[in-house]
Length: 314
Ligand SMILES: C[S@@+](CC[C@H](N)C(=O)[O-])C[C@H]1O[C@@H](n2cnc3c(N)ncnc32)[C@H](O)[C@@H]1O
View 1 (cartoon, protein in one colour):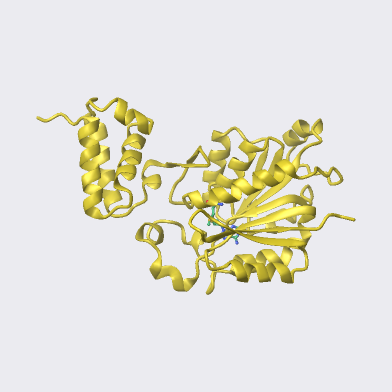
View 2 (view 1 turned 90 degrees about the vertical axis):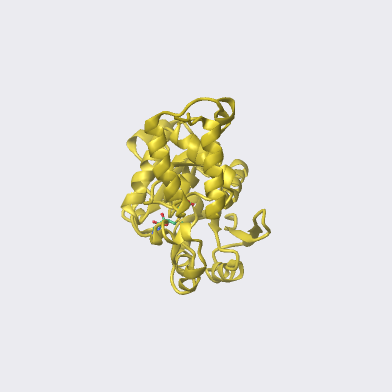
């Protein structure tokens, strides 16, 4: 009987994915194989001649077939990478996208250059209070629609003085978020709340205004459903994708309450769909909350985030 080495398997999976029209067949094959064998991608090449045992072969056979039917590889292997960090994922949460890294980059830049205001006291947890006690440099961040908590975790990892409250309406997604916060040992700096946008913040008397609010909300319109890739529309949670007839429902609802939650000199950063920049900017202007509103493009030259800043207190 032929021995299945890593090299032979990799080539077979690449050929299979190419035949099935899967995007980036080599990368997809590497991710699946390294995920199942619990190896780094580079190790596939340094251990090319290593035989793969029967149990792994059986599991791979099943997963390769499922990937060939467009099931997303991060769901099949239960993890993905975002902002150079590993995150657990499951079909209960959206798979973090590379485009969203721009939002994190701008958020971290903002926090690093933003003057600290100590006038408002936040108490996130008793534990938090203790670790916060001696820190005057803490900046308070809210991540609405947190999903896997990829944005909150990436910000916290890159800005040690961030204290973050992250909310989501999906309990199932929050379970994944909790696992990721635990995985990155950030329980003392990120607090999860369940509920509709700002609603879970209001009954928490310990929550006041934020230095920064970030949000990657659902923003797909009902009409766009058919144009979505099969791996998105058949597998990712609808709750994470759709936001009403024009895809703008969540932005509208954020605008209704945003003045209650931002400090002076603070920022709101929203990920948007490529055609939503003008509409979201207009909505934000109508709140009369912001002194400056800017749309930023991603590497593909598509509008990707809106950054809105409140005025300094005179
Ligand atoms: C596009 S996903 C973003 C997930 C994650 N922040 C990311 O960037 O990968 C949107 C998330 O919003 C949540 N969501 C949808 N409607 C919501 C609402 N009304 N209030 C709070 N969260 C909501 C969904 O459960 C989903 O996790």
